[in-house]
Length: 597
Image (cartoon, rainbow, N blue to C red; front, top):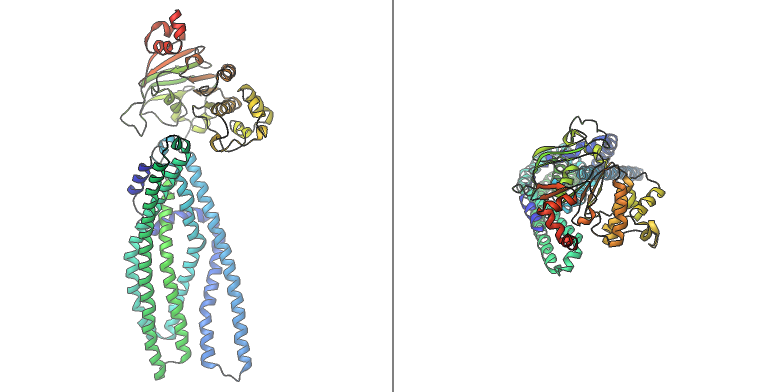
């Protein structure tokens, strides 16, 4: 699995231009007033910075020691401007930082909402750890740009152009000489900037691959330790992390080289220009104050140019991050709701129909999980699906929940094809108990209440009693309020399964899907839960997957699957009498009963 994330990191296209940042505009647009206020504060602070050298020139050219009042006026004005600059900078910082945090929070929410609604087909190709890396690492890069870099860049752009204009008015000759430096500065920015952009994207991709690798290994920590593969897992993580480091090192070296070239060209050029200016002062062509003013402006322009080259690298990284996030937001789901969904039929009276359904999982396109399956489940009927592992039983439930769409055939509920219904509309009428119980890092009570968020505490406890979970929950240190740990690590397998069953009971849906619902229970708990399931199945359309045939003997009908096809169906007694696959499975589990017959 880790290798898949590595290959994915290598295969992604690189960002070609910073135009990808345009994808942030829909998230920034709602905060136009905040951006306007920040822009005003930014312009005012830049203007104040540009005015200061004019005051310095007046002091140098007109200052006389005997004029104490003039000295006081200049320094009083300097204090006033310093105060205005401080206030304007503080306002700008507050507004742009708040804007950055707000926009990034909106992006994170939008990406998460999009991902939580994606069908499982998407997560067959993209690791959840990589998605989490994009939501965290990539949005952090965007935050640094919106909350800081863009503001600093705009301020430096204003100082750059404002300073150059004022340099021109100060000395057109020296400004013309200074402009000769510009091509020498732009060339490394263009050429090295392209490589920096590519390396930044590569670095971010390897970070995502590293995150995906770590997430997979840590979520499977018990299996890794049980098979003593800790060293192997560490080696694989080390490999991906080192590749990320190498990519980062290449980016750092490229950026360092670009920065050094730019700084040398800028300040070296300024030194030459000032050397010429110094000779102009000696010849009387310009005043000392004009040269000092030009020096200050040239330093400001040079500093702005250097700062922009630094910020350019951050902007490029943010462009790559934005591109990756927009990819997630624009991902086309292979399972989508119809543009004009039909009304959900009465699920209590509607039948479930599989009409000549053939399905291949996206990750296994050449292997049919189901092939030509036709199955009808009448309202209120309890149907058990049995067969060897991989025969297609769980796929029936995956398709019924419309986690996937079949390549051919149709699936209907209440006479309406699932493709014509909004997924969240018809799923409300389905309660699922999966084979691998999903337990959240919350209290036991809230885990059960997940089946019906507005349920009262009494309803939660009634559901727990029906699932034979009340006794062990009451015995926990804090009862129903006890935390159960991440993925329910503080509970046994049977306890997790009973909480999952209680959740389904609480949902009180007309369609019940049970996928090995009692597989992790001991004999006594299984009997208690089976009684609860039998009561729950009354007046409900129920589909049961079970390898333990003792739990499905009472089903109205048993459907036998093998290699993605239905090979037999009927009652337990009929299927045993008919021989075939079911009879062989029953013989393995009911040896004494079969022998007695």
